[in-house]
Length: 66
Image (tube, rainbow, N blue to C red):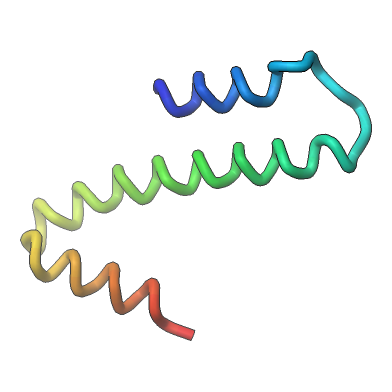
């Protein structure tokens, strides 16, 4: 929740803007926070199921896959 609050603070810092060029960067930040929170939640489940070492190996392989 703190990450989401921080993103809202950044996005709304200068007030809501309508220009697409201004919102594009804000949207990327918001999407990255959502993706990171999913990674943390799903990663915890993976660690509990497969262990720390196997989960780290799976994450490294998935991250380096082309």
